[in-house]
Image: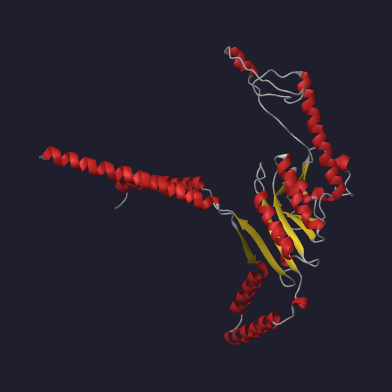
Length: 342
């Protein structure tokens, strides 16, 4: 009888475990399917309103109680008067977009959505400020990023780029599209050059008697390879392709920054903004914070951010990391506890 009871208990546990696993798989599949249809959403933040609110709070804090109440009434009247103004009398707007680029320029997905949203409502008197931070990356990715910014100029909207840290290579390709470039004094600017590198394992394979075959149609379908034996003809063609990209990069910068001595700056070097200004690579030494502050009381400053839904794998990885950290902290706490106390 005890044997039958143990068997039924084991069977019940097994069924419960299998059911939990199946249910987990179903939940994951449904969540993935639901997420697949999500595109993301645009978030808007009124920076000018936040700035004015912060100033008002600080100002009120420094005033006597009687004057504080009077100031609050005045602010309410001013806000009411602004709301009653006709749309034609409203001040021009400044739209802010942040771009922090990686090597593969995957952030262009959000940039496309943000630019499209701005162009849907922007007027000729408005301005777009893009805060660029990137050390560059793949040519086709940053070429598309620059093209997205070109859409703003093509619509007759003033485009300004602010560089607080770095805009090099593909980052500067984006920045030079703007009519006006501002940069913090110690920001890194330039690197108008092209680089490509790859390892070759041919001798390692030979050492271990491993053959590698590669078949192509077209003389230059493959110039350099990871596993085959590279020859001088392939290297020369590869260098020609890099030079071609570099020429187009130089031409692109020269068209957008006609005052730049392109042969002087297109050496792959980078400069601090103070030096870059002397080379006409930037127009003004100023942080993005200073640039925005001069407009907070003159314009409505709106920051746009296209938020993409997190992938299911990323969510699980994030949760796993949290559990791992909590587990380590719990273990450390248990180790420390015997040594704590009086």
